[in-house]
Image (cartoon, rainbow, N blue to C red; front, side, top):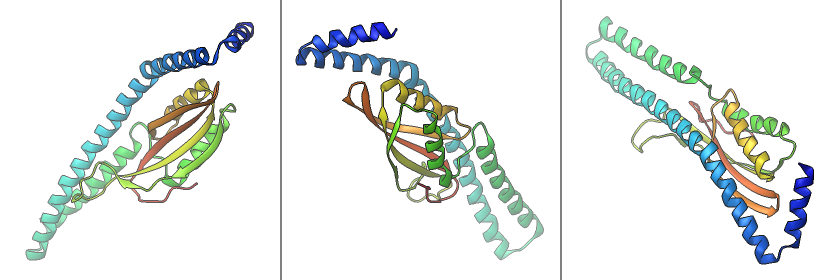
Length: 214
């Protein structure tokens, strides 16, 4: 295998600058094709499933919140045990829905722990070097301006240096973690082949608007 690589490097070195650019471009396109078909498309479907799951729970929570408000207003006018009992049941149901979402499949990683989780995972991929880890502002997840926020989206921008396959393995490893950590954008730029600089925006979801630890 090493002899084949050395032979390729010798042939590549003999090429003109224009030919090197053409070969590099063809290689990048081929790698992107593998990335897209084997990894990116299946991952996109998985992320869409998570979004659908959270959206369903959000709608249930919002519907119960409206009923709870109506019962609370009714209780001010005519306090009775039935209204209070129904309100208590709705509040318990809302808490149960949150617990169900947190415990189902993968758990939400605490926002303060995401940076540590990313760094610990990076230590297992010695061919990658961390260039920068930047915290992005938290935002409501899937909410309209006039709707209450149930779930917060906490994002980070991580910049890595390494070869293509090491970067690909890192992204795959993210999906094997016991928490819900996803990535939704990536910028891959070859600096000194085979080394490249990669910017990945990753995010986790939380019921709390906590600041991310860096």
